[in-house]
Image 1 (cartoon, helix red, strand yellow):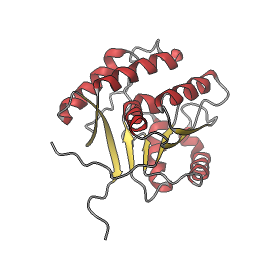
Image 2 (image 1 turned 90 degrees about the vertical axis):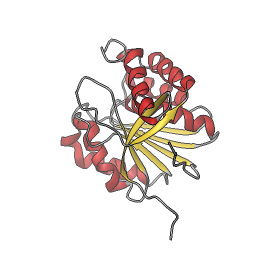
Image 3 (image 1 turned 180 degrees about the vertical axis):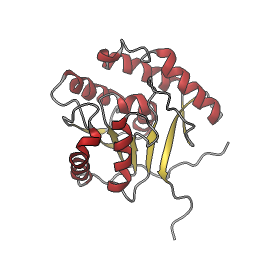
Image 4 (image 1 turned 120 degrees about the horizontal axis):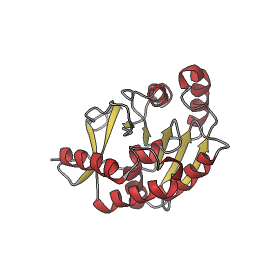
Length: 215
C-alpha cells in the first residue's frame, strides 16, 4: 500500500474536550511525531478539567507523550458533558487559542462520535481552523459509535507499548473503567493495523484534505 507522507511538520495542535481524549485517540501518532521531530512546536487545548486532579494528570501525560517538544498546554473549566449548552463559550475559547498558533496539522475528535462534547468540538474545528489539515481521532469507549476511519497512521509496536504504558501511568482516575485496559487499546490498534497493512495503526477521519501540488 502506498503512503502519502507530509513534506513537513513544524507545528502540531491537539484539541480535546476532556483530559485523556488526546492520548487515547491519538497518543501513538503524537508520540511518533515528537520522536521523529525534536523541538516540534505542540499546542494543546483541553476544554474541561481545570482546577481538578484531572488537569494534573493531563499535563503530566501530554509532557510524556510529547518528548522533546516545545509544548504548551491549556486546560479550561467547561463542565463535563455540557458543550452543547456552552457552544458560544467554546467557540470563543477556540478562536482565542487559534490566534496563538499556526499549525501544519490539527488533531481533534470527529463528528461521528456519540459523546456530545467530542462531537460538538469536532464540528467547531473547521469553523476556526479553516485552512488547516484537521484529522479527527477515534475514542474507544462504551458507546457503539466506532466507524471505519479512512485515514490510517501506522505505528511501530514499541510506540503502541509505550502508549499503553503511559495511559496507565498518567490516568489513574480512569483505570477502573471497563474499557480502559491493555486489550482494548491494543485490540483497536491491531484492527487498524490490519487495515493499514501494518502491525498497528491509529485511525482518523479527515474534515478536508488537499492532494497534489499547489497551483
